[in-house]
Image 1 (cartoon, rainbow, N blue to C red):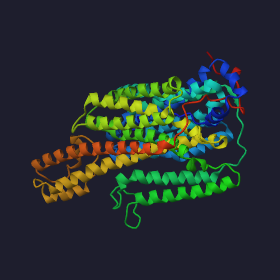
Image 2: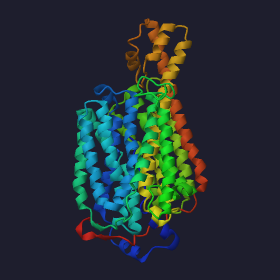
Image 3: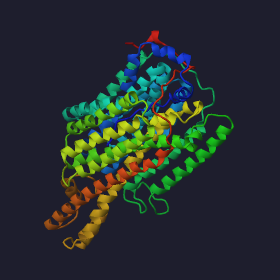
Image 4: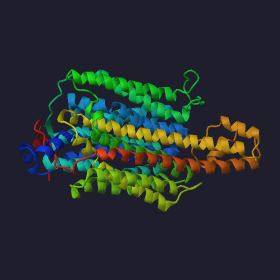
Length: 576
């Protein structure tokens, strides 16, 4: 469900990385790197990053509680997972632009407060509609300001080799974040879902207080006007496309299902919304070219679309989180709803994933500085696909194979950590300075879009696979009467245990023999659909290999200090 680690990629330093890789470190960069590393600021930024991961982890662990307390369906749980990256993807670019105009500290604190408010709404939500459209939207908006600010503050606080360490620490924070789901699982098991989200609200309040310990900085403000039209086009286009994709499983692909909010010319609104979103994004591209021609700052600079290496790096960011979305919609729900795992048991999986993620995201740049980014990312894609294959084999009709679950989780960390170690640098090395300064928001957007696509696509494969298979096999089974088979057409079948399915068909009049046969059909269909969804996810990840020949250059170069910013250490930041 949302237990995926949030891998923060070192994006905003890309302009400096590009310059130093080509021309060597500047004099101004070398001086700060000789000083002691500021420890307190990076701890605050890591805690903020971990908070975003904690929210997703809490949602992952709350699957059973949402079903029992708020009556959530699989489609609603899918939407709850997707609305966070959907909102984040739609507004992350706006958050990045806002940080350059009003200051990263202000957007950082504003984002934290929105996250805290969102957690309170999640804790007190009386229904899934309030949970999704109130709490999850607020947390997504908060993250759209908080995460780009984390990436934007680092180049203002750290220079030289310290910046490499700082960005590596943020990238590896996803490994530290693995501790949160386990702790939250204990809270949830003892005190319940509502208390768990209130604990997260308190966590964000503490991070907000800690943010005032950040050192004083001088940040140059962007004087160009805010591209409101571009932001509006980007947000609306992404929102329409992603909400349409997420609605396919509950609204229907062509024929509208009972869950569709409305119909367009007699068909489901899902595909028309996807098409409308793509059209709006096409208008955005054309409009942004005009903005660039006038010398303005485009929300989506053309370099992000025309440079093959930049595209490859953005695909790597998106696929890492597509992979995380696949885990969140397939692994955690199956283990809790079908295999009967407790929140604490599911939380231990995050540690198994987090350790290799932490080690590789930080270790590859540090101990293999000259490794080929192309080979590293290719190896990561293969590892992620292998992890999904192992996960597919780990599920059984009514349970799971515990050794394979943990092996798949470990391989997931290997793949995610490997790709995230170089994804941002691939983008950085290909961008000129002006475009590189904006890349934080755009890469964050791609991560959120990738996660949303993973949840939407694989959720649709899962739900349609279960429903379609049950109905077709029941229709062809001679032991099931045509009346019962026809009645199944009006039943919404969700991912769940055999008992859950029996409750779903309780309103259909049938014999005990027919009920037993239908339960057998559904359990087999459930297994087939989950494994098919894992296979589709692995195929999408491997398709990313097509982009990797465009990746050039050697491993991480040292990141220089910015010649445009200054840090006053005296007003904050404990050093060591």
